Amino acid sequence: MQIQQNISLKSFNTFGIDVNAKYFVSASTVDDLKQVLALTNHKNKFILGGGSNMLLTKDIDELVIHINLKGISVISEDENHALVKANAGENWHEFVLWTLNQDYGGLENLSLIPGNVGTAPIQNIGAYGVELKDTFVSCETILISSGEMSSFFKDQCNFGYRDSIFKNEAKGTYIITSVIFKLTKKNHQLNTKYGAIETELEKIGIKTPTIKDVSNAVISIRQSKLPDPKVLGNSGSFFKNPIISLEHFNKLKDNFPEIPCYPASEKTVKVPAAWLIEKAGFKGKRFGNYGVHTKQALVLVNYGNADGSDILALAKIIQKTILRLFNISIEVEVNIL
Image 1 (spheres, rainbow, N blue to C red):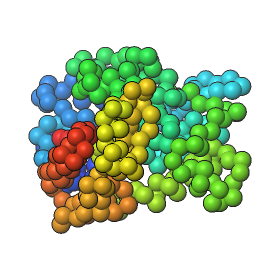
Image 2: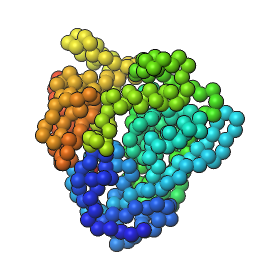
Image 3: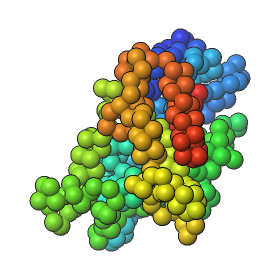
Image 4: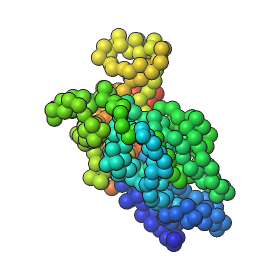
């Protein structure tokens, strides 16, 4: 384990933003991580996971600690379920594929989501009717200030829509080192109602899908809509879908009869941010080296050598326009640094 100086972070963030870390170290074990956190000559430390849910807008003068903890194991199982532990540095999609190869169900709808296992609970990642919290049991963490280890169980994590305790009261306090999931071994509960999964399955003639079939359908849908970060820099969905009152929605429907929504509660609905952004005219718009993706309005992209500050400025323009046109505030989903 060696601390390096003036390291480009371009390959460590899915937006492909070329900023430098003044100091950089990769921690491959929990002991390594404890040693680095205990360094007194680097008081300020920046924790870097998969780099998939952030936009870097400037160089980082702090010590960047790359969480590179690897390993997947089955810690217990019975006839119906398996408890699977994945370390924080495992690539999320590769972990999902590993579970499918063992015929463990529960994560198939979360296929092809960028990022690492350790950052997944922070965001409570979700897609196609499934969220991480649905299979989450607990996560092991390390307290940044002291190196003390502790566990957070599901009811302690305050999971919400793209939200958790780690984005709020515990933000910047802990590093997640591993996550435990409870997955099915048989009688898998398939969720195919959301989005175009059933349509995709019908297209390839599958009437009784397996968990791998559902995963393949999700992968196909995502690839048709979302750019590969290795080809076109992005962080997936840049904005959250806003939740508004039913009263507000009904007023909007007078002017925009085609506006879609999904029930959120008895008195609120969730409006697709992608629809709002497309309606506002931003879908496919390009501004030199950056812009809004041609196939998915939720995705801001780096066409090459864009500055993070430029992409952030575009995001703010989109937010202001949506507020002006629809009186809706849309929140940024990614971390801005």
